[in-house]
Length: 316
Ligand SMILES: [Zn+2]
Image (cartoon, rainbow, N blue to C red; front, side):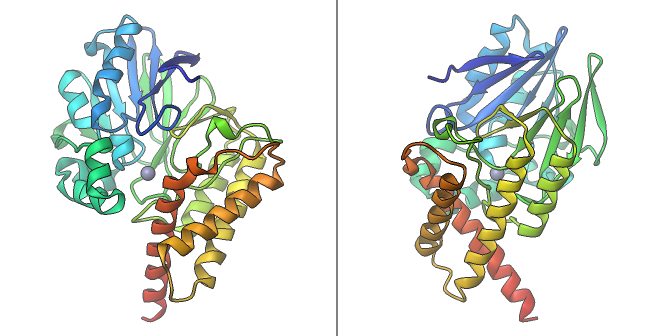
């Protein structure tokens, strides 16, 4: 059973925002002395949970100086606008490419309705509140932020999307990876290492950029990976190898599909690839593969869009 608020270590609390189910999407509260920062916000309905996390720490909304979103997908940043209304001293840290999407989230919302379907969108993501760009800061690659003496370093990490950044917490030597270092659910534990799969969501996913980002993050030799879906994980280089091998497999699947990029066919191929990976890492029993149904459907959509872009480019 995953608890809603879990104090991990080094002043970091994992908040299960219970998006679609428990154990699927996290936001993080970093506390240093009497200051705090959120990393990720979950979707719009998460705001009361995020505020409760503060209260449980004995912190006021005024104590929060930063809200960091790794990218503008609504399961990561959907609550940011509404949350900032409650946090008078907080600046939103995000990738420069994400500014326009959160200043006017209407396109983001329309896009998410297409990807998830309107019904599911309304039931889970809910929408997004516009944010005044005056409250935003867009760190460059390598820039660090000081949280009461604790240093958080921003890394430009394209691949999952063009507006993706990761955050290195120097105190715990842990990386907030957003979706740049894949997805990993605890119910699939039991093999020689955790099962991890890529997140190749529409619409900006790029395989080469993703592989380069995974290599770059692994080269930092972090101790911890704070995956949004669903850390923390202890880092081991095998996890990077697993992601790399699967991304290569995804590329092969897309290329072998030729011009027929049907989503059900791609989804089935990716599901087979995931199961084969599970076997390779020696997962002991047959788990509930249905847990990956939504992820693999999104992955297939993102992969198809990436492939269509490549084919268009090749056609000149
Ligand atoms: Zn994402």
